[in-house]
Image (cartoon, rainbow over all chains, first blue to last red; front, side):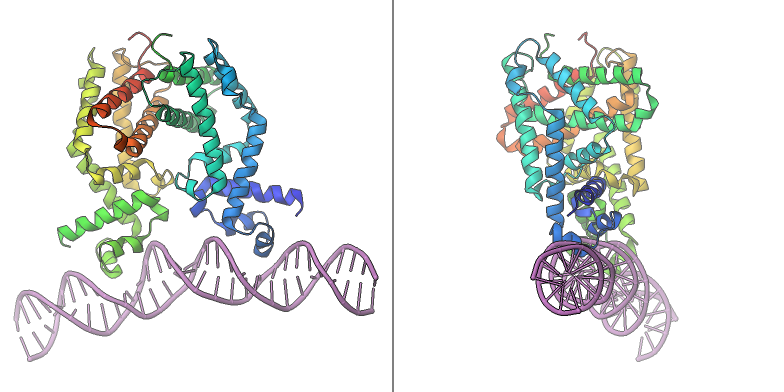
Length: 201
Length: 201
DNA sequence: TAGCCGTTGGACCGGTCGGTCCAACAAAGA
DNA sequence: TCTTTGTTGGACCGACCGGTCCAACGGCTA
């Protein structure tokens, strides 16, 4: 099918899935939103789950391309946290103002229960968790990350904190000018670092 | 209606709401689970939303009674964190092994979107947020909580971290004996304290 | 012009949902 | 015994769901 129409479909689906989760999302609403008939949808895509998988796959590859996350091994050394901060800043800049990214962020962690539904989502989440786990391992090896908590718990804490910060920032973004926002970002990163760093700074 | 049957209904509803959220929860499944006919349910309760409200209300009063959270003002002073830790320990002990509490914990933060549906839930969440906000304010006033982040963001971070710890602990609890579990709890609390404390310990 | 084929609109399917309705039942007061 | 009152089972309602199916359409080659 025509690429433009296909992008419209994926965007509408991403927004619907992000807003309501997989189960609660209405396929009828998606195809209504982009003016596609049901027969066309089933001709090209095949099922609601296939649509979800395509959205996840497309979003993941696009995100991976824009973010180009560093190899964890290259983060080792005394500059560990500086490099992490640089990566986070670059990632934030890349994601700036792209609603599409916000949608797929919601898809990744909001629905909660829909993780089992999609092999693609499971694969992407496993990839992210693996990368984060390796980053934490490298951080521990070079003394930049404390080891008094299980690594998997640390990873989940990082997820939870980032998610909370993202959600809060989305709700309060209009109350900040650029300068205050930069300061806020710095404080947030410092909080994350404080959570993970050993006591000796 | 008979109190015992009523408790059964509330328990079944709590478990269903906790497992699937408000929208996805099936009222038919609830009444099927406790052998109640639809007409009886609508005779006594009236609607799905009313049932949700009753579950929230009942759970909140029971929790409040068991937890007896301290007045934030009594936490002020150099022992701020020690008193917080004592309260958390007491709360954990009170909630130990009560599945009912786990259910309503899920209700409070898992569904995410269902907050707008229920006036009761909104009231309870507002109460908790207010209490937590006052605790944080007291902590700041006595120098036990840092002030480089907005208080509302700090509150959401506390929520997110506690939720992540709770979820992780539920999944990995069977891997720990009592001694290791106590140590884990201590490390978790230390992490929370590290997130909120000023740099000077 | 005839036939083909990828594409499309839209009726339709079985199922589940929350909610309504009424006849039947049991207990109790007369 | 008759009636009233509170309670119950379960048929039923319209709406929406994901998914199927088929007739018809439009651009192609011959």
